[in-house]
Image (tube, rainbow, N blue to C red; front, top):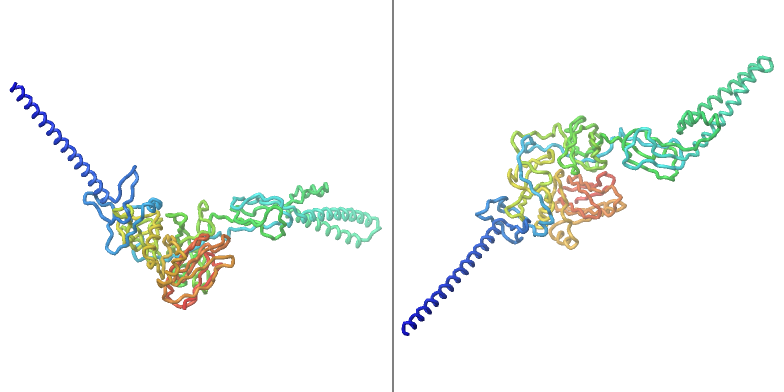
Length: 564
């Protein structure tokens, strides 16, 4: 019995030891799982700090805007590290997603203009070739019954553009029949007089008078016939009119005198037109003129026959080559500029009338090519901030960009050579860089002060100041003015400024039908487009006293800047 009790006690001790061992084993398993989870969390956190973003469903999510720039030692750097003193622009998640920024790696290219060679550049406007532009006039007045063409249509020589119901044609037909009857009468009288002369019943003087009247009637008939032909009747129709005495409908066809594009239409159906009124205008747009304005100091470097390369923002990366065909002998007394005409071929008529372009003249001012490879960026990557040209360079963080001042050369095939500021291999923002420029101006508005902005880079407009910011601008030392474009032109048309004090002028176009779709201030080398009802801010510093003009793009409307 004692043995049985001892055996039961041993079995109890064994069972207790096994339970204790199982509890300890479970405890160590839980501790190990917690350590593994903690290690994973720490690893993900470190990776997030190093790369600047984590990926959710395949889409990058920006790091918090207030997170400092840093890079993980374990991950390779893919962006630029900001230098001391450089402006770093950080976008919030929403702005970054809406901006849809695109970047491109800076590359090197040989054969571009060398540093220091600028060339002569000017702004210009596309116009039709006046030597290939033909007005269309009606040969007779009347009521417009039908118009067969619309603006922009291609027309050929002799094509009927419109039909006019003309009382003048009806009168000409009646006059022709009257003269034809008189000719017939004089013809018969002439034959009777000849018979009378032969029998001695009439004198030769009578015959001569009758013969003269007959020839006069024939001449009048020929004149009346030519008038009908000029009014649009064919020879067959004139003959039928004389033979049958039946009047055709007095309809005059207005035909195109040349082949080309219809660029003007001045009449509508039912309108009464007079002879000599221009109804249409046809232009051959296979070649166009560019009228450029250059400063008088550059006139000596531009000669007739000099090559000129034209570019436009409408076709980035595309150039149009032409030659100077005319130099205006006059200089505008206000802007101190002279007009230069460049004739260009216009394949597929891609250059539209009224389009703004940039012109680079060759010859004395042509940039010399560099033998060494030069860093290049797309034109859209370079922005103007005041007098500086800048690009925005990507950093290790996808939401942060460095504003870097650069020295850019003249455009070639849509790209700009960069002589300083960035190097090959760095990544710059190409599409959406204007948004970063706006953010930069918000951070430091004073940097927009510019006495001499660079005119030939793509210059997006900065965000206009709100009304509550006007007082702040004045307190910050700006001279503030606003100019409205109305039916009367620029209102006010005179601005008074103090010399040496930064000025901020806001232009607002309030009407659609106006030539003031752009404003030009030649003295400060400024040209800005004026979108409808969108404030456009122009910053400059008047550096000398005098009266300086600002005009619309076509120089039809103007105002004055009086610097005291």
